[in-house]
Figure 1 (cartoon, rainbow, N blue to C red):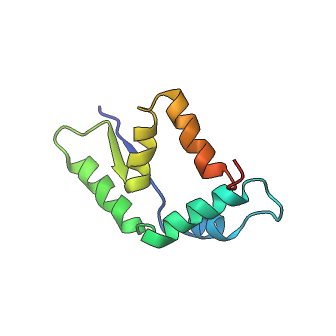
Figure 2: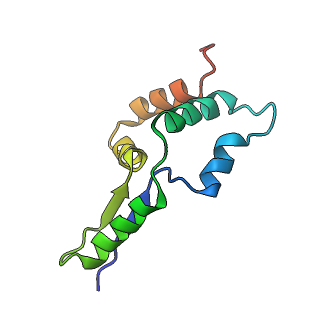
Amino acid sequence: MHVSLIEPGFIDTPMVSIALTTLPAGSRFEAAHATVRRAITMRGPLGPDAVARTVRRALSARTPQRRYRVGVEAVAARAAFLLPSAALDMVAHVVVSDGRG
């Protein structure tokens, strides 16, 4: 028996739509939320059919991969684990920062 993980990035679902439009007023994450929202809406999230195609590919593979990533966010999230901690902290600071340092 083989087990494969399907790791989707942002997929056009009601959950993502709500997450892109809802943030409590005065949240300390407003800057990060705006950055992520701009990145997602600029490119547009993939549809659920992209995940379905990946699941079909995994199920029909003679030798399935351990992980199937769907979308650039999933690939970027995996790549982040390859960065040294200091570099990852720097990227997180830039994303979360409100421009005041």
